[in-house]
Image (cartoon, rainbow, N blue to C red; front, side, top):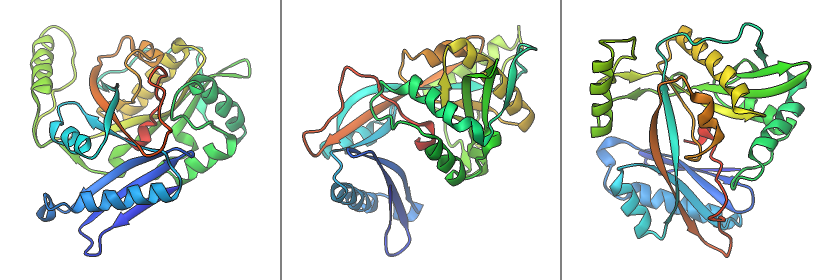
Length: 296
């Protein structure tokens, strides 16, 4: 269930999504540049919070990229508390990766959805904020997600058993992301990449003014990271053909997904998970957290 709020002048928009009975996820927060820093988003977010309260949610959560101190301060002033820090690994796409010749990789068919749902539940069932998947829920996800279809969801199969599934969502087809400036971390990585490129093929550095072409991985399910790695390499090769420059997902800092990325160049960006609790319902600090990359 979702709530979208647009102010009367059409100068800003904010959106939240109710996840189960207890949580509402704050998503897009957009303001026309000339109206920024006038408290517009604060008023719209309050409307989203009110909507969540009407639906009986117990908590609100949001993600903040590392070094965004103003956003963290804004949240803390409004009662949000830091719950944990996740990671968004980014993998540059710049060369073809080796995929086993006998790997049975194909696009998903409607009859695969029950098995895929079971695999996703097996992968994520112990994670907080995870809503159990079903064939019908997956069908709705595929139909409602812009520029996403059955062809975007791949499976690795062996002897009739689905060993891993991996979907990819092309951000560049629904939004334009332009680099305005580089932080110290990206500048340092650029320096390392330029130096290493003297000795071996390396991805090109990101520069201000670049229009990023990226894909987000979702959904992700696997019986073993080695099976997921085969699909990830295949997706890398598809991305190379499509002109995609980076692949992303989001997970816990020690999640098994990261093992599937061996052999890739990987740049981790930390995201802080902030939560505000309205009722006596909160996240278990000892349990890992699931965040769907499509909601980033």
